[in-house]
Image (tube, rainbow, N blue to C red; front, side, top):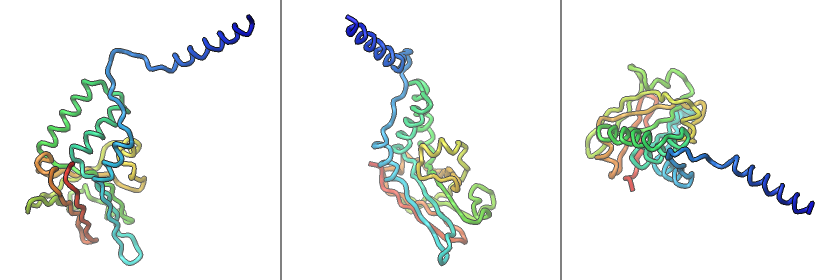
Length: 202
């Protein structure tokens, strides 16, 4: 009898412990997680890197992610899961994303230069220009420093390091009109140039 009581007590303890860690159903549908196995291969496909040197010295380094609908949709789901968005918030953010893509194309740029004076991409008199080339036309990019915290950006762009400066660059051409074609982005200055060619969206 004593043995059965001990077994029952242990069983009840395990049940209660498991219940205490079970998610509570509040009636609100939360956005589910995006598996790394889905996100990382897509991110890698649309991310390119260039390192430029003068002799043995690194002059600048740039990693660029092409923010087409495939990348942005997965990134949005990822953010929504971490921030525990409900379905209404998720729909609002998704609609906002597609509205932006209907008028502009965008990239994420992680930039590094050993000299701070050369890391001035978002300044009005920057030494840098960024262009998007598509179908024989060239579009100049508008550069802004990313406003998110480092820890937030690191979740979306794991290649980002502390010494990088994160930027978003927008081009006045709809992403929805060009993402099904191969596209080239050009970063250029008196320090040198780099080209990033992205494949068409699958």
